[in-house]
Length: 471
Ligand SMILES: *Cc1c(COP(=O)(O)O)cnc(C)c1O
Image (cartoon, rainbow, N blue to C red; front, side, top):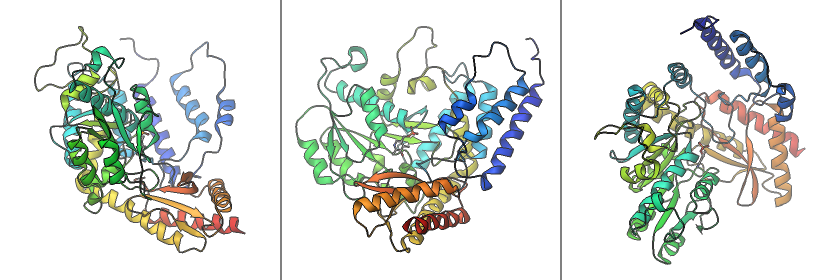
């Protein structure tokens, strides 16, 4: 092999130094990008390079050019969306993953990548209290995890009525009824759309004020009509953190022959702490579960898990036989049999490293700490006149309403003004959402970097923004 015209060790060391100095800025960095998308496009726009740039220069230019458009998502005062913080151990494991250059397609190509997935999958099932026989696909995130799980569901409910959807497709197939809660995450609807099940062709079921499916409405929806059915439940509603009443819903759905899928992108991790496990009691009775590594487990992006009780349905939905691929013997596992892709990143390494680093007790403590911080922030905010917390803070999500004593339109305008002011200030970052028709500020406490001091600084900044807006 020709020697690269640069010092590889020096190149990697330079990248590591740059990464470390970025991370060191996080505690004091503004919690917002300095440049917006349009500004970054202007900054980066350039003709296609005709000639190359030396290795060290490329990395230096990349680092310098991107800085203004980076958001301190891995910092402790980032409360926007539901986003994990790319823990340093996961990042280091991910560097090795890239450096090793493993194609995680099959177990002969990379025995390490395949075996580490098998082991990390076993740990995941144990930590989340899911059936040990379930199979796990390592995917990009919960969106694709929902897709994979629902593909297996589609396969199995149609197989039971004698239809082979993998071979024959959906044209002419018996219709599948999809029952789903009114407050399900948008990405589940995306998955249904990709699978030919339609995002509007579903039976939407009423939910309670926390976004949990109403058991009566669920029963009515499932009882109506016959034939193949899939019920989609949720652990961790994105605005409230609340989970569906699994103990009641799942056995009922099973009695009516439905496959039960649970979107638990972050909420499934409530299982990992004894303080919150009760909220998702009975979730292990489902047929499939989607969850993320890059949220509460703090792996770097991209990392999610499609977990399916019925391994055969999982493989059937994801595997198209190809003659050039080696046969798999009993007890062997090819990572590509459980995901849509053949060639892909070996996500098992970072998953393994994060679980090995935190351990069961560390994960439990982190989940409990985030929930305690969410309650503390909610209590302090609620003590201020004109601020209301509109959800029961049962997990890590806080929905905040400003001008709560004012008419709706005024409260909406004030809430949006507070969010804009907070974002401009940059002490902490939180975004907006709509909940039950009202504008809210949504706080997600899910960064491994967040501590008491961060939470208190965020509360102080939010109160300051509120006092300035209310005039
Ligand atoms: C984040 C989230 C998703 C989507 O997960 P990605 O990892 O962004 O693909 C789906 N459902 C819920 C409840 C989520 O919080």
